[in-house]
Each structure stands twice: as structure tokens, then as C-alpha cells.
Length: 76
Image (cartoon, rainbow, N blue to C red):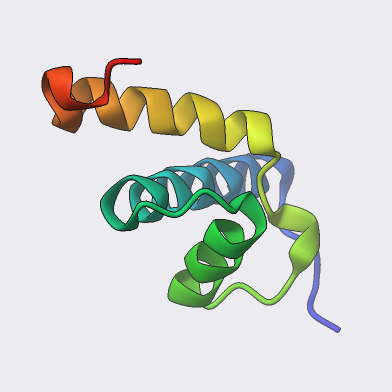
């Protein structure tokens, strides 16, 4: 079993995972949060599920991603 990350590093990793999951969802049309979380974790080499972001964190990151890269294409 790996050792636990310091709180600041865990927070940064969770944020990065949320951003990556949001990118995956936006670019590939994925709607399944768990699948997007797993793809993000796989990409970062994360095995500890306790650092996975909550769906609300991904929703926030997705809204930010769409503001930055989506333009009017993603306005609902």
C-alpha cells in the first residue's frame, strides 16, 4: 500500500484529475463520470481511488473547459 499524499498535493492531484476527466468528457462526448475519472486516473498513473474527484468537481472543471475552449458550441 502506498503512503498518503500531503493534503496540498492531494488537493492538486484531485484538481488535475477533475480537469483531465472534464477534458475527456468534452473531447470524446463521454457522459459517464466514473468512466472519465478512471481514464484520467489511468493517464496520471493513479491507483488510489480515494483521490478521485467528486462529480461536482468535474462539472466545475467541465464548465471551465467549455468556457475556455468550447465557445458557443457548448452553451446549453
